[in-house]
Image 1 (cartoon, rainbow, N blue to C red):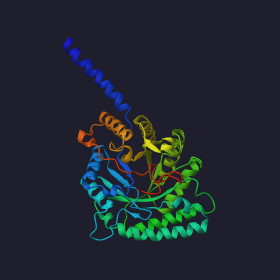
Image 2 (spheres, one colour):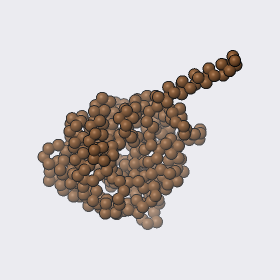
Image 3 (cartoon, one colour):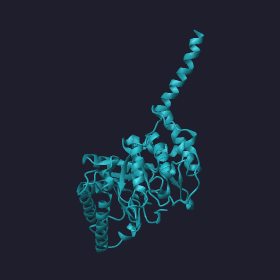
Image 4 (tube, rainbow, N blue to C red):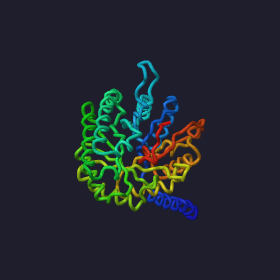
Length: 364
């Protein structure tokens, strides 16, 4: 009997510990954003396949490619028919190999924020120019969008709560986005998404009504809302108010709301650095509390063990937490942590940098 008791006591302790861990488990990501850069265009297939394979084992099912064109830099088109495979072409191939879906971003204009700050006529001319560019870009992307791993479109222009108030601005934005949707619909019926962030300048209900009107009038099906926690735009209490209001408004219209969870924190003049797991976990717990899905910004570079000590630490903490919390546990070996040579990297920020003082002007 003592032997039996000695056997069951550790099991009982382990059972209670497992229950405690399960109750403390956050939401784990199934999707991440990816910002294409010129340096990534030089990566070979093996490096991309290793990265996507790692993500797939960590539970990633979908990657949102933030843009296929950044300013004048194209990531989807080669200069000649016999030229090297493009970055977007490589990504579709490795996504297919690893059973990951790919959402295709359109053009991001680094001058967007400056161009929309002018008057009504100034924006009208700019939007007409963007519409012509977008028509050509969609035509160029049509063949890529026929691949099995293609999962939808992402409009790379971001919308804030400062630039679209009064003076017919919301109506002009709706007209611009509606035209984008019509252009996409000429060749594809795949879902269309866009992202937004708040500076806390509009009450949460007014912001939710704004987006309800924009999505319903334009035909966009999904809104990604940046949590703003890493960029210090919102705190958790403010974020909850916005998410509650957005969820209530958009669910009534059958629109999908996804939270972009920022995996970085501002580090003064040094820019952005991978956050610690405890902070990310608390943010994800809020997402789970409101019963929403989260998309990571971003597994690369902020949860990539090859991108410095802070990113490696977050990667290991995330992997260990997931191992404890899930039945299908990621099985990663030491080869996955092999260090690669350092390379030039662009300044890191939330998505495109959210607003002019944060954005990166060169995708290098």
